[in-house]
Image 1 (cartoon, rainbow, N blue to C red):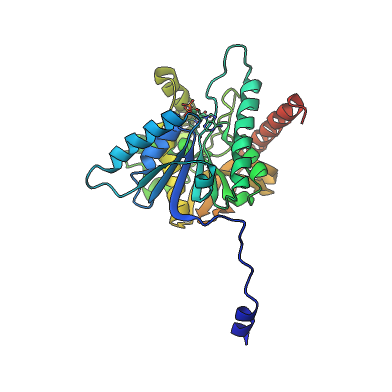
Image 2 (tube, rainbow, N blue to C red):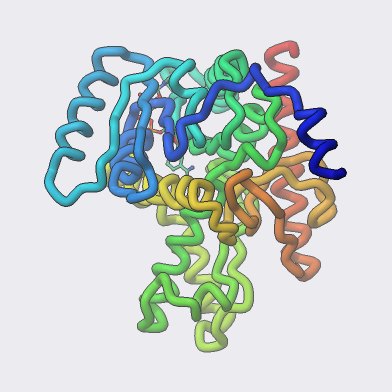
Length: 334
Ligand SMILES: NC(=O)c1ccc[n+]([C@@H]2O[C@H](COP(=O)([O-])OP(=O)(O)OC[C@H]3O[C@@H](n4cnc5c(N)ncnc54)[C@H](O)[C@@H]3O)[C@@H](O)[C@H]2O)c1
C-alpha cells in the first residue's frame, strides 16, 4: 500500500533548479585568493570540474589556460577547467566566492570598502539565485562573517547552505604553532581532541581584543604560553601581509578542505562561520564556531561549553558585526 501511494502521487519535478554537475566546484573572483583556491581544488581527487567566473574575461581565460596546463601534468587527477558564466556557476555543487576589493582606494574609508564589498557579494548572490543555484555557497571574501550573511539573505538559500570560511585559517595557524611547541605533527588527533580551534569574528581587522579562543590547551603551555600563542595567531595574517602584501595559500587550502567535506558528505567538524540561532545566547548573526559540515553545508552548529568570559567574547563579536551591518544599512539608506 505504501508503495502504491508513492507511485500514484509522485513528487512534482523541481524544474526551477538546474541539473547539478556532481563534483563541480565554481570559484567566483579570480584574484590571489580565488586562484590559490582554484590551484588547491584541482589537486583534489574529489573534484571533476572547476568553473572560474572572473570580472575580466581575458584574465580569466588566461587563468583557465594555465590551470588546464597544470591538470595535464601526468599523475594529476583529471579535472575539466571551464571559463564560465553564472548559468555554469549555478550548476555547481559548491560555489566559492572570493570576489571583492581587498584594499581601500584613495579617500575611501573602511566603511566605504565594506559597503562596496557588500554590493559585489549581493550582486553575485542575486545572479546565482536567478540561475536557480541550489548547492552550497562558501564565502571567503572579507569580512567573511558579514559577507556570508549578506549572501545568504540575497540568495535565499537555507542558512546551512551558506558557509563562511570563518576561523578555519586561524585554527590551522594555532595548530601549527601548538604542534611546534609540543613537537607533534599539526594534523594529529591529540590537538583536535584538545579543542585547538578558533572562535568568533574574522576579518574585522582593526578591532582590539578580537577573540580567538583556544580551549583546553595542554597544561604544559600554561596561561602565559597560551596568551603568547594566541597573540602569534592574531598577528600571523598581518605579518604575512606586511611582507608580501596579501595571504593566499593557507586560505586556498581551507577552501579546498570545506569543499571536500561537502562533496564527500564527510560530516567533518570544522571551525567555519555559520548562522547562530540561539547558540551562546546569540541570535541571527554569522560567527565562527565548530560546525558539522556535510553535503548540505553546515548540518549542525556545535555550541561549546564556554566560561563566562569566553561567552562574553562571542557576544561582543556578534554585537560588533551587528553594529557594522547597521552602519552600512544606514549609510546606504537601505
Ligand atoms: N577568509 C579568509 O580567511 C581570507 C584570507 C585572505 C583573504 N581574504 C579575502 O579574500 C578576498 C580576496 O582577496 P584577494 O587577495 O584575492 O584580492 P584580489 O584583489 O587579488 O582579488 C579579488 C578579485 O575579485 C574580483 N572581483 C571583484 N568584483 C567581482 C565581481 N563582481 N565578479 C567577479 N569577480 C570580481 C577582482 O577582479 C579581483 O580579481 C578579500 O576580501 C580578502 O580580504 C579572506
